Length: 367
Ligand code: SF4
Image 1 (cartoon, rainbow, N blue to C red):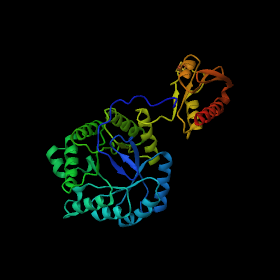
Image 2: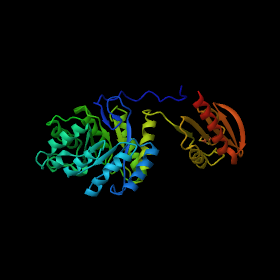
Image 3: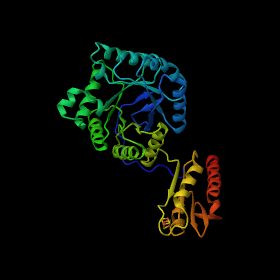
Image 4: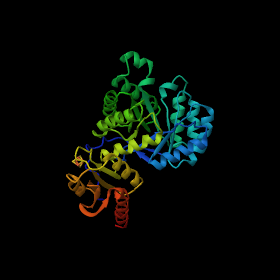
């Protein structure tokens, strides 16, 4: 068995209907999936596929690509075919690209029917085409592009306005018997966003795609997303997540995975339990924790590694971990399963931890 199975989740998951984005189930009791969006020009097939490959390697499960032009639409077939993860085409306003994306073999389309309602019968035709292709549609309501009518009615993008908009958009598909939907109601304010998703979760059984939109640069966006997703997932709300950062999309995936691991919604992989350091520290804890993290990156087995600045709390924390170090007097006491196995000079702490981690990993893989 696993040394550190995920803890009991904070809440039972909300019961949502299950949809499939390619091979990835979303909703029902499917694990919460992590997604991102490419930043390349979609028409640049090579660059887009390269970025999708990087995202896939980082653990991205679903990828979205923007489709603002005919050149982008023309690129979708090759991208959808060569990507190892399902590709969602993100389309605003132009119904013709929705049909192109469906024909291209995209695993889903993100489109807001409210934007294309003006085109007679297009919503009906999209519902028909998506149905025939067996692909779902994401309705992505966004505070920044809320329907004018709802903006006027509610005064601004309140949670109620976002929910009303989402349910109205969903009804445009439901009218044509199409319910293979997932929905997002994004806002840049985590409090508004959490309230919007709560309202939406109570009002329908569609799977929900969580996102804090325009969350900001990496630090701010990470905190905002962690707070908002933590609140919602902690109540069992949310089926797939996208962290939005003004940073490379691989960073979004790392943050998304870390959020799910922190919430116990996903098996934790490498977990560094490092102390904050204090006046007792006899080693540069920050540097050591960073070096150990970098040295063990990519380790696939779940491993809890304690990095402690002194021997006061070191042995205690190290006992709870698979592996640990407590530093003192220019040396590091290396612990494996709570036992001191070695004492090495400070300069050899990182390499020794990596060696011991590899031994433990090999033993776990054999078991
Ligand atoms: Fe301070 Fe030692 Fe605790 Fe680190 S392990 S915070 S150095 S007492």
